[in-house]
Length: 497
Image 1 (cartoon, one colour):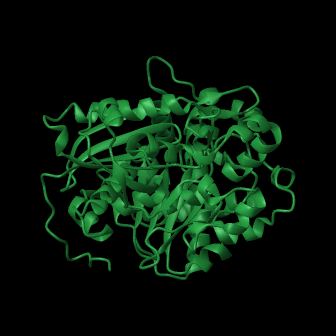
Image 2 (cartoon, rainbow, N blue to C red):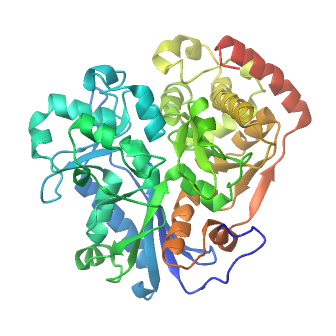
Image 3 (tube, rainbow, N blue to C red):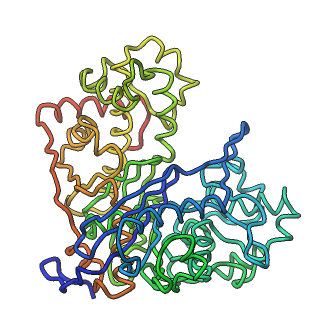
């Protein structure tokens, strides 16, 4: 049973917990005490292997070494590694890895960013019913992510397929390297598509279709479950004390929702990273299915499911515009210039509208070449926010619930202008937590504490670790102006209203 928000158990302030947010382009980790005070933080860029044909892969061993180096950096800042009670890994998922009988990688990891399989689902798995997959797994199958990767590997790399004993994901492999047990939580297992989400088991129907056995996949566990102790080899690689508990995490957005108190239908988390995602608790899973949303087990069965709309990889699409349209000069960092120019432009960017999902830079470069840099910057910010507004409106129609809190996390929380545009376009206050940039990692801290009984449950952990917040209120006049601009944008790009 969840703890009421007005109540919480006494936490043991001496417990230190490490939480990871393993993002697509960067990995972040925090060392926190049980009161939510961050003792240390560290980050690394993810070493993506890109090719000219739009393939994106990762080296599993290098990735593991980078995770270990982050842990070692955090542990080196304290006197006693034994003070760290547990470590937990949350983050983005959907990166496919094949392991041989000795649990060694057969080939590089295929990233979820990889587009080699896009739109090829019917060719890769002929006879597979996408609707049955969606209702079982909770994510629409559109030819990307592990289910498509597996079809591609079976068809185009049969030698690798034959060598593989275990079919898994990169995050699962990290648990194996840390504690010797190959596991995945029910949240991240959603991105593998082979889980029956409501039954919390691997789908026997899908496994039979793919010709796989359950023991060829990772072991399924709930989020916040102890899956083992750090092995002697992992202790040496990380600086952790042998026996430090390893706890399962969750997908990145529900992890951030845990640490920012987004638990109730009507509340929303807007997570701004490589993809911009609207995450919302919903009482009824069927509501999410009706809206074709991405679904996460989140706090079910005792609490809400999680539902997501995503502007997939929108930050990468925006970066191409920035590099070509407002490139940094005179020592000014690119994103500082981006913020400054956007603030100098008027709402509406003098009529320049950009839909990054429909207008890649190569198709729009002539229009951009004739625009002033400040209008390009403003149009990019506004375009993403208009798309978020569209998703928020759609979600509110689906649930019919009263409006609750809107929490913004991610790098754009540092922008002096972007959160204000979001508040004005939504015409609702936007909450920014002091630890918002580390919300996913702090959610992993909560799960680490739940797994080791430092916290009683999610609400108790949130109450004990929550940080201060600032609220960005909408400006009434700008909101009225943006209402007209949004309608014009929605008409121009034929957004589903």
